[in-house]
Amino acid sequence: MKLYLATYCTLTVFAFALIVINRRSCILLQPDYRRFLAVRWKVVTFLLGAVGTSIIAPYTGDPTWDYYDAFFMSTFTFLSAPWAIGIFWKALRRQCRWWELYCAVCLGLFSASWSYDLYILLRDGSYTPMWRENLYASSFLYLLAGLFWNLEWRTGRGATFAFFHAGWPSAPEKHPIGRIIWYILPVSLVVAWLFIEFVIRNNG
Image (tube, rainbow, N blue to C red; front, side, top):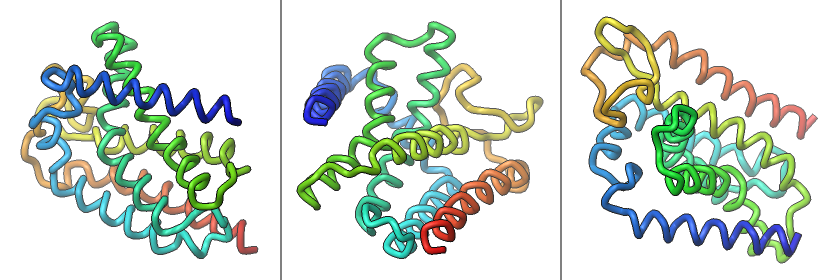
């Protein structure tokens, strides 16, 4: 575990260094990305999710989950997952640079797992035995969140993922929320059920 800790700390520091070095071209730091995230329904769903998970965290029966890690993992996910998933798609199409893919992988793992691992180590003084389970579960939720917050409606295309289109990320066309509500609701309900099922299982 010491080797694992040293490895991911080194990888994370290098990723942040690459982002700073390439800050003028890194999509994550551009005004267009901030406007892309600032759409009302995205902000509202983030706040509901972050506050909801933070409130229920101490009551889940999992001693490694508290107000703080629930909130900062939710925040990291909102800020980075839409970008990271878009970069993964661009990488599949060979449309991104190596450092972008590297940083997307590292920030994804940091948001979904490594930040949690490090926090528990600092809080409890020992490495959490839940690290593997959290890595799998949170990585799945991170992927789902990245897809969720890339949802948009395009004239002539209907509901689609923003990263499928040229110019990503950019503020989406202005359409009533009703255009995509039937896509937002099922994903929201699935995530809510996963948390509810987790709480029931750990307190049963």
